[in-house]
Length: 326
Image 1 (cartoon, rainbow, N blue to C red):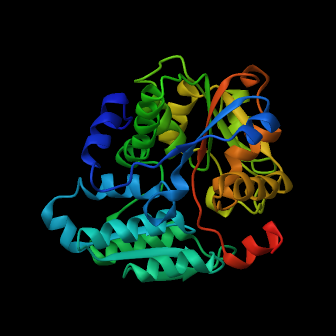
Image 2 (image 1 turned 180 degrees about the vertical axis):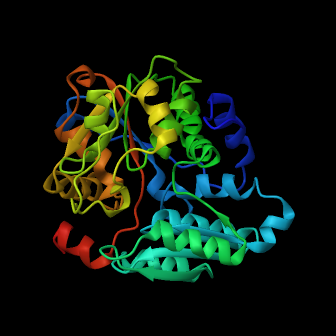
């Protein structure tokens, strides 16, 4: 594979992952359609193994490793969902794994990583560099570093969700006009755009982000990478990357239509509405696309068929109870 994956790479990944990941369902709801002013179709990656789409890219990446590299193990850094994806994939292939996680990572994600037998190295977001720690551990162990998004095999693996979505909408005989998907580093949304374009080359794909952490929206509007200000925070811990990645930006500037954003209050309301109408548990980052569909839908998408990617459901129980009002 070249540095930039293409649609064929994503199709190959989808075939490779068959039997390793779930084919997640697509749901509909009339009440949410009415709120959005569009016909929404929900791709439920929150119901994926480990509770998010991340198992797709992690599994595809680990499947590329030769036998001698598998024995030396892998290292990854993540606030949670990529960590769980790598830990589970490593367990499935009987490989050692070390995950570098922030000390304030949601407990449910730390527990998930531990439950899959991976070693954890905690770090302080404000005073330590996860990239430096992971690089040092990779050297010490002669292991393989598994990036969270800026890797062609990771992007292709995440894109298998787009292949599935395209197949499911074709089976429903309902072409989508637009798709809204969360964007952190951009591995999911760019891979998904590559995969779905095999079914509809005219699909328009929009990023979803917290409004105070909207690097993709600003980058797409300006035509060049824009970073978030240091210290910018949101409840969406899973998608708080500083800026688009080099590979994902090279793809995204060609594949993506533009950006949407929602406030933390909008995202919390989307979580409540997903619980009420879809009976689904979403984490904040996993609800970003729903929040944008309901509260920041692009004018061009109003009245159209819109795919919404619900990307993760690994929410801290106490936080979730507060948000839904238990």
